[in-house]
Length: 350
Image (tube, rainbow, N blue to C red):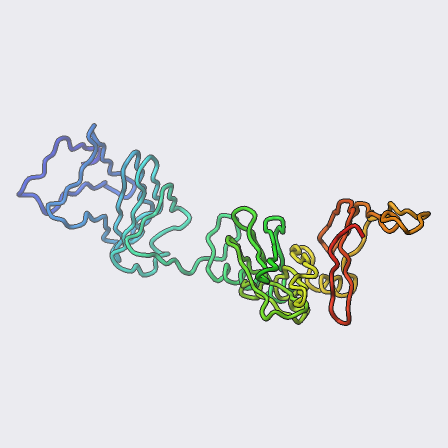
């Protein structure tokens, strides 16, 4: 009866087949008003409690929950237009959605513009969402193909330019060379340091070393190769700069059992490889200021040590993108060459 109320009705065993609450026309509304303990819907078996329709339904089924632990909603093929608006408001464990069978034409049953989740989604099996529209806003979901395309474009750009390549911050690592074992080592100053090789990042957390072998005089170029592995060669090629991550140069004097010089090559990421090759092979390190020679005894007889001694002032220089500041020197080593071999005279008073 229209506008009637059922109060305290208990369903009897003789009337188990159905219990219908029906509005008299399509414009009417069926309302269940809970008491203090709420509304409980019990099935006599373990079957699922169904919300179903005998014809295609239109409109919304609005479910609003407050301060609940969870809600489990089972979607089957027999349900059309189940939920257009699902709101979970309050502290709970979230919404768990179980799909007992594939839903054909899912987009016909749900209005995606009105499904709003305020808590986590938990699926009983891994869920794959396909046929997403291309995202345009910052918080849009996107197809994997979009992400893959962006990644591929960046990878192709890195490979084409061979950039970035080099050290993120050379001061985060330290280099050394042991004359006794002919071993070069590079280690993090604290924790780790990062390098890039043609756009690929490598984070280094431990000391890495290479040993010059055999014991032969000459230059040794030390670098991280395309796999991020520390290695060396005694033949210079521009690929060391453009395709790998340059680290250092050691000139080894086998006869003296000592390094003649030990060079810094941990350049940064800003300078491109082509520019680095040009500066390295054509200009080299460049003087900026200072290093004035002074303390000469020009009027001496040449009979005293001071008549043959002088000092060097402090100064600065630049090796491509590396700025070097050096203090004043009272004694400096001297590099010289005998035939094709470079030698070094140790720093002393003369």
